[in-house]
Image 1 (cartoon, helix red, strand yellow):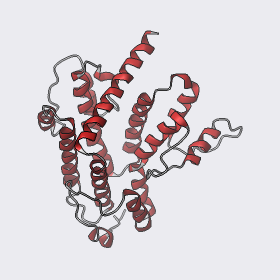
Image 2 (spheres, one colour):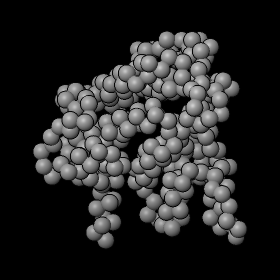
Image 3 (cartoon, helix red, strand yellow):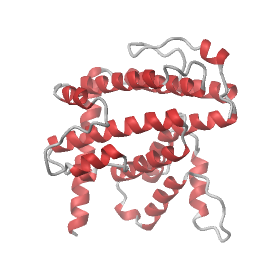
Image 4 (tube, helix red, strand yellow):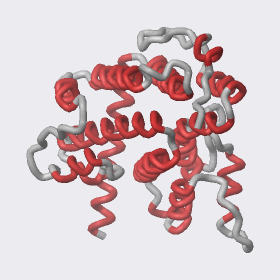
Length: 283
C-alpha cells in the first residue's frame, strides 16, 4: 500500500515546544483542519485519539445525563442517547459507539445503583487501550503502548506510596504491565524491554507533583520525536504533532498551584475507588 504524503500540510505547521505560552490554534480547530486535509482513512486515526474525550463524556453522561459539548470528541449527546435506546430495540441494530463503550454502558444499566465514576473511567481506559492496539496504525499503536506502560508504572509506584493495592489500578495485558503484576508483592526489578525505567524512578523522587508530571510529559514529547523522526510527511507526523498540541493544551489550562490541586484530587479519587472496591468485595 502506498503511503500518502502530506507535504503542504506538514510544511505549513508552525514549530511548537512544551514552553509555548499560547497555542497557535485550538485543538478543536486543528481537528477540523485535519478532517478537511487528510484522506478519510487517515482521519480515522485522528478520531481514535479523540476517543479519550468521548470516554470522559461518557462518564459525564452516566453521572448527570450531560456531556461537555465543547470537547473535540467524536460523539454527541444525541449519539449517547441513541446508543442507550438501542438496548431496548426489538430489532437488533448496529451499535453507534465502539464495543468497549457499549460494554460499559450495558454494565451501567445492569447495576445503576453501584455506579462509580472512577471505576467507570478505569474500565474505559482499559477498553480504549485494547481498542487502539487493534485499530491503530503502527505509530499510534507504539505510542499508545508506551504511554500505557508509563501510566501503569506511575500508577504502580504511586499506589504503593499511598498504601493501596497496585493490582486494582493496572490496566491491559502488555508485557510490562504483566511484569508489574508479577512484582506487586515483591521488590520491583527493571524490565529490560521497557525504556526509561531508571529515568522515571528518578522523577518519582521529586516532591512537587506538578513538576513530576511536567517531566513525564517531556518524556512523552521526546518519544514522539523519536518515533516520528523519519516520518517527514506521513500521517504519523501529523498524529505526533496532534499529541504535542494536546500536551501543551493540558499545561496551558493549569498553573502550578492548580496543577498540584488537580493531581492530588486524582489520587483522592483513586483512594475512594480502592475503598469502594474493598467494601463491595466484603459485602
